[in-house]
Structure formats: C-alpha cells, structure tokens
Image (cartoon, rainbow, N blue to C red; front, side, top):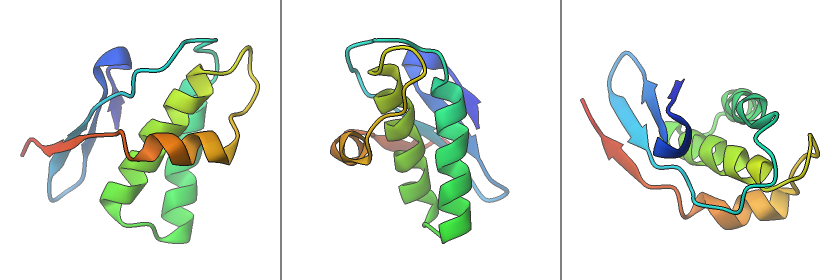
Length: 92
C-alpha cells in the first residue's frame, strides 16, 4: 500500500493493482491516520476479509481517524458509515 494523502492510495498484490479514493471528510487532525490504516489492514488480514473489503475498511478507517482531534481513535460506527464511500478501480 502506498498512501497518496488526499488523492487516495494504491494497493498492490502479486495479482493486481487497485487505486482507492480517499473519502472527503472534515479534518480534525492527521496525526495517527496512517497508523489507523495499517491497523485496519492488519485486522482485515487477521479476520480474512476479502481484498476489496479490506481496502475499503482501511481507507474508511484512515478517513474516520482524520475526523478526530489529536490522536483519539474513531468509533467503529463512523468507520462503517464511510466504507461505502470508498471507490476502487483496478489499475493493472
């Protein structure tokens, strides 16, 4: 995964490359947003989420994290509301 900040992220596997959109949200703080994305990817891997669901969860978690002030973690309900707003496109 390579973050492009507000421009989204690129996720690459041995089989394909997927570009994920960022979700536009009000910004409280960007501190810890990348950590939140990594944590979501680890959770997705551990629980066996399908690849595209994992990407959407990671992007939504990062966006929800950005909405918080300081390093406060986002509520899962906020993340769940943002998951459907993440757009994916296969690049290669």
